[in-house]
Image (spheres, rainbow, N blue to C red):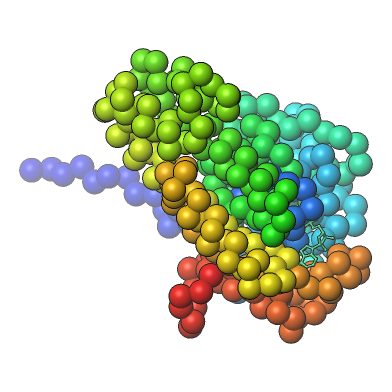
Length: 324
Ligand SMILES: Nc1ncnc2c1ncn2[C@@H]1O[C@H](COP(=O)(O)OP(=O)(O)O)[C@@H](O)[C@H]1O
Ligand SMILES: [Mg+2]
């Protein structure tokens, strides 16, 4: 019997393809000024120094400043070029930073407001990001709960929710989570009447009295147990990771645990407490000096906590367990 051998790809050809799909990590939080860019900068550099290849992308097109924090003064190309259709491949947006393993996709290269990519363009962008030959893509989100920010957060492998221990930040973080949760449900809902129910529930003053995602899931189950179970399964994959930044007291540190239990009780999904970063005077100085804190004050507590967060994201076991 003659066997037909399958045509093998030459090892050279195979070697020229990216060996794995990068892990996408979105850094959001709903509110401006809570430390999203600060965390992105220091975690990106720490991961790069651990030997991983990292791309940091600035998705904050209203107030792009990640490039400054990474020491790139005047980016010559940026995401704005992709949005405008001048560049079609995210790989062409990469800018080498001072760090050998770290590349940047800048937000804008002028100070003008740039629109977010529309839905189709966002899908193309995300597809391009997943094709990048790198280990991690960190996406620094802007403030607010616009669809673009929610989509990056939802499609990423990890969604980090940065909050400061103050009521306004906590409130915005919950609104962001709630909006992300409903968006994900709306995209996943198929059953008759279920999508409409999700739409209705997004209005907090809806007549059905649906106030929390938990209430909503109960309502869905009531009209369609099969769809309810399916969506419950989908939502289990939604696992935001909370970071408390600028912690000053023990109560601030405990905030992360409180948020995790609120998510479970009222939202019906699990969140993780990834860690906290203390308030560090030198953080502001480091931004003014255009140097990351992990260099400006390498032996500071905040630098240590940031590298602990990076290690957790990279799956490095920590020696001390049982703390965020
Ligand atoms: N742990 C911290 N301690 C002290 N200042 C901080 C800390 N984290 C961030 N900051 C300061 O807060 C300001 C806003 O942070 P930024 O990362 O730009 O916020 P966002 O990206 O969420 O808008 C920055 O000037 C930064 O230096
Ligand atoms: Mg920012």
